[in-house]
Image (tube, rainbow, N blue to C red; front, side, top):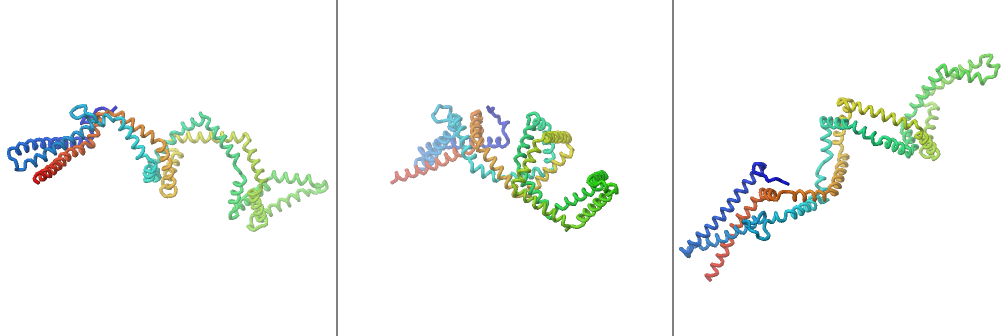
Length: 430
């Protein structure tokens, strides 16, 4: 319930309005008193000096008095009972307090919160540029970064305490199981073959093969294999050593030829192999099925779940360690990311338009769903106001104009009375 408000509690603007209201009340009341005194004086003078014209003054003063009294009654009847008398249809605002509250709430809901005006007003606001300007300020982005990282321990605790981690892992694995890997692999390999970039992979493979052939253990294994395949007679003449040297020498020579010649037939054959493989990935159901089977078997292995747990633990440790340090690299990177987002948003009209459209849609939907609650809130608030305080606030804000009605009523009434009396006077002469 609103408490009664003293003059000292008024704002400077309301205090000035109240002073103006009091001045206008004095003027309007003074005009009414002057009309009454003028009426009395004109009537007396007209009896003493008939035909001089005091009758016209009396007619003006009489009509002005009636007009002033009528408008005084009308203005007072809005707020209270005139002279405290129980006259019907007076004290209109106090007697209709709750109905006015309901009507005000309905008026706001119907006219101010209607879909079209709300949508039009929301479209006048550039939400994206406000977000952009806010994020582009390094100080604000730094504060937001610290705020987000400050919530990290609670977020992690919530994730672990509610089983969200297991939920996300299972959802992630299920989504991976539903992914068609073959087209993705085909696209990746297709992008790799642009400008023959896959040849660099072949070069790395050739270098790896050369290292393997240079390894003594590999050489010993090849020698043992050759020795096992040779007849006993050739072993006696150490043909295995001769053949080993030839195999190693020929292999190195071949590898060097392929590495040194960009147009070597081996490279062309590798091009054809990659091209055919990519095409089969794109078009062959058998290849797609084989790859999908391999994917399902891989995801079903317990090592994958353990790997997910290990990744989570590492991520959790990293986040907690960095969240505790306001000067951590993560905090700096997040701050820089937010600032960059602000700058990029300012330079991207398309993204700004999409953000603004999204904000308008969200806020319009929210207002449409909540406007009845706003209407009820306004009505309840107005109902809870102290009626005397409500009347005083209304008087402070519109009372001065209402006093002008009293002033104008006396003036217009007096002129109307004078016109009517003049018309009557001339009619009598005829």
